[in-house]
Image 1 (cartoon, rainbow, N blue to C red):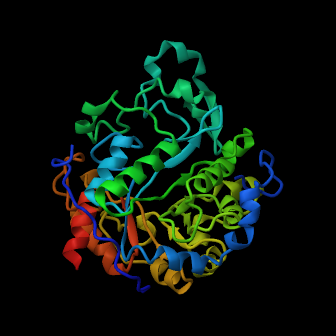
Image 2: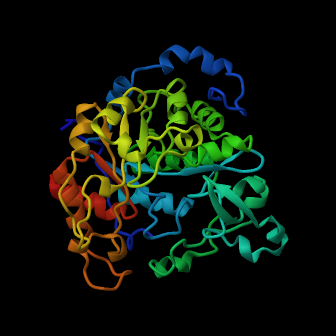
Length: 390
C-alpha cells in the first residue's frame, strides 16, 4: 500500500440539502512553444514520482466527482460540478472536447445529440453528420462543427433518463461550460468552502481531434498556464485513455498524469499506429512499470480490479492494485454509481435497475483491495463512506 497524508476534510452535504501548446511527434496541428513554456521546460520535466509526492500532500483518499454530481444533475454542467464540490468531492472531473473556434468545453463526447437539446434547434439541422469516432461510425452533432457562441445557445439534458428520471427535471436549464468557466467555479468554491477544490480533466479522443487540426493539448496547457495551475502543488490531475498524448504532456506539465484503461479494447493511438498492445497489456505488471515512466497513476475500469463472476457478483481481485503500487502508481478506478443498473449483483436492492442499491458496500469492497481513490457519480455517498472508514 502507498501511505499518504490525510486530505483536507470534506464538507459533506446531501443531494437534498444542497439543491501552451504541446509537441506531438509526427502529428500536425501543434504550435511552437510559448516563452512561458520554454522558460519552465526544465522544471516541467519533473520525474512522475516527484509530481505525485506533491499531489499526495493534499489527499489520502481521493474522491472525484465524476462529470460532477452526475447522479443528481445533468452531467458536465456547472450545477453538477458545484453540487459535487458541496457534497465534499476533492476533485471535479471535466471531460474536454473542443469547439470549431478551438475553445475547450466540457462534454463526455464530441457528439452532443444525447446530452443537449441540439435536435430541437432547426437552425442546426444541417449540422447532423455521420463521422468515424475512433473508428466507429457515429451519427449526430459534433462540438467541433459549432462555434462557442453557437454552443452557448444549447442547453444540457440528462444522458440516461430511463435510469435517472429525476434528473430530467433539470433538462434545458444549463449551458455547456467552457474549461475556463469550470476553473473559475473551482476558485470561487474553494474560497467559499474554505478548502481547495481540484480539477481532474480528461482529454477526450485526442487522436480524433488532432486529425481535424484541433488538438486538445495546446489549449489544455495554455489554460493551465494562464491560471497558474501548471505546478507540482496545484490540485490537478490530467488523464487520458490514449498513451502518446500523455507521454507528450509529461514533457510539458508539472501536475500528475493518469493513464486511463478499460476492460476491453486498446488505446486508439495504438490502433492507429499498429501497436498490438491492449489495455490488458497496459495493466500487466510490465505494462504498469512502463506507465510509471510517463504517468503518476492509473485509472482502470473497476472490473479490472475485481472482475464479476458468472452471476454478476464480485469475484476474486486481480493483482492490478498491488502491481500498480509496486510501480509507484496510485489507483483511481471508475465509476461508482448508486443505481442497481451499475452495481454488482451482490449489492442490488431489488430488480428495478433505476432503484438505489448498496453503494456503500461496493466502495468498502474496493477499499479493502487498496485503491487510493475513486470516481463516483454520487460524491455524497463516497464522502460518507470515507468518513465511516476512519
